[in-house]
Length: 183
Image (cartoon, rainbow, N blue to C red; front, side, top):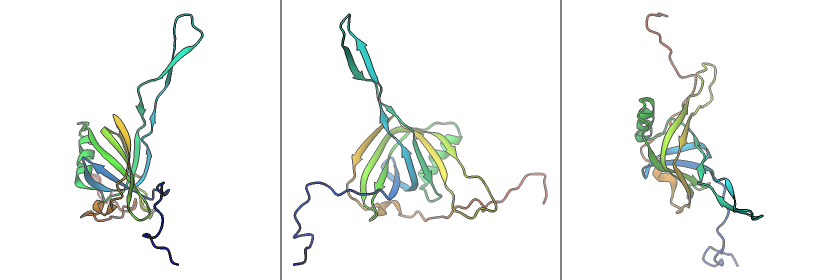
């Protein structure tokens, strides 16, 4: 007998997955795919309190601290993402909320790392090297006020593609011009 999905018993535990694809949402709007993600962890210190002359100590957790979220992105992001970067360079310090969506190998949403009131704290550009032909990425660091981990809804990540076309960004693809210096 050949087993089909309908004839198999329901699983009591969800299957494990490996996050293969990441996408960025800003203000519930798809902003594009992300090459890599790190950070966003939550940590708290343990506080010890001595009460009078008693030998024991009372312990509690301090306020949670959220690690910065470091993203590596290419050139195929939504215009709202670049508007946020423009505000960073102009010194406005705009806060945004959004999510890092982790998808499996079938491009299905499996988990979400939601961040609230994040501000861009660092932006790194690749070195311009005329001999390098590899694709490069821009690094962006977000400092969130809060982070929450939420289970994904198994929606397809195709909503992140939309009208955004993938563009190859190479560090050799640039022109240097200096006013007053002729070639």
